[in-house]
Length: 98
Image 1 (tube, rainbow, N blue to C red):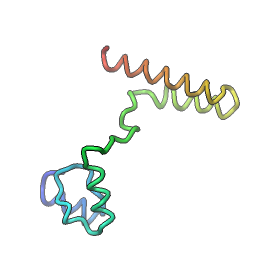
Image 2: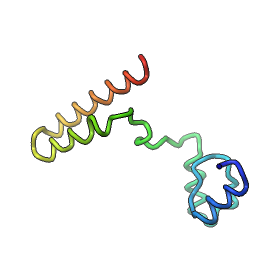
Image 3: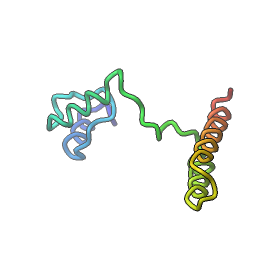
């Protein structure tokens, strides 16, 4: 979808999205802000959004339950960070096979 001229037209002109991949012609973007966002997002210094790096199950097994505990004063902010970090590392380790 992201490699054809038709897809480029749909993404840029019909959907009015700033493309998320590097193969688009920046000159075809409709405004300066879109062009700047695209240049920054595809630069070598750009970082991937963190939400795409969560291990499978992290939201349901750690983030949701521990945040709920925090909201009802079941754990402190420090405990929340500690528990979420530990669960993240555990799931990452399991899923990376290390």
